[in-house]
Length: 84
Image (cartoon, rainbow, N blue to C red; front, side, top):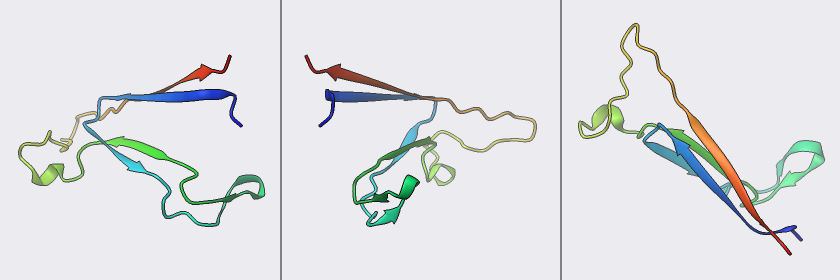
């Protein structure tokens, strides 16, 4: 049983969108230290530009011109509620 009643995560980024992977497809996948991962035992959040940006005029541009610099920043913060 977890020592926390609940936990929270916030994601801040200068990217417009994100992809969320839930591991729903994972079944008996080998992991670290001999462990086998099961369905929904993990999550991945990747910040990014909108996937169809090059084809959508209303989306922010993702074109990087020669000499321009690209910088992306993402901050993941985790909080918990300790049991009393």
